[in-house]
Image (cartoon, rainbow, N blue to C red; front, side, top):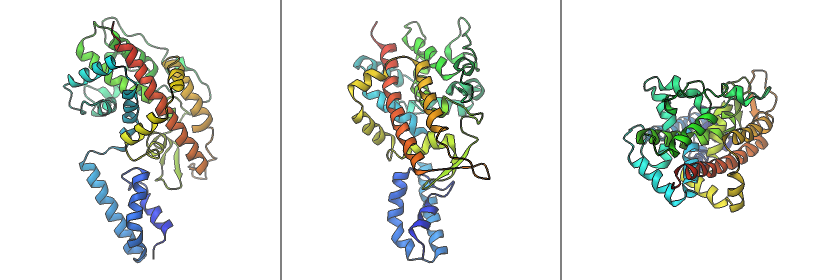
Length: 335
């Protein structure tokens, strides 16, 4: 018969698990008793079949685990928008004719990734660098990470700015466009959608740091109860999924724990300060707490690492949501 440990290993096998860990555990509970009565080979076939059915169902429903982090940030921000800013955000999104995403705030927060990946008019090459500020761990220099802050040519929109630029600059540029009444309405919509995404990017430690490893993408990691993957994916998705079953549930929980004092404190400074703050988390925890690699160059994350990372992610999502609301409130306040 199959043991609970073996069942859990199968349910977290690389490339198989189609849903967050909270749902994964519920799935295991439902099938554990049945599988435990089967021969090992039959149990494995049953579990594999059930997982693939779940995966296909979620694919048909458009489930994308990697969008959840930006959705959470947008939903947290929505709770802290001033009434006038909220109305303006809703009006801009309602006027959007782009079909890449639905036009609610959470879906719109995923647009920048979808626009890049769709490679519309070479959008991949044009916008790929804008999602990061790769401050090197060994020699941190934010100016270098921002390509020395290239100027946007006169008469050019931020969306058509230099491809070699960073998320810090793009947040400032798009916020300025959103705040300017003279900005074309269509460009204001684009600026809003980039902001909804980029403020979240800025607060992901592996979007604000680099260890000569493509922001953690080149580091192979594994941990108890998780499918193996790269370090960037763990911080982008797996540790976020630890916080709850979906974006709405996670955002609701985070909102309920944000105090007035925290809201005031987190609104201080601007994108450059926030990037430096996120870099320190990457330096001290994301990279600083990594164990030594094994003989194959992979890293086995301890339970303590997972706990620290999950706590970091929770705090960063909260900060990103409050700061996104602050950026939008400032840009969209009545003039």
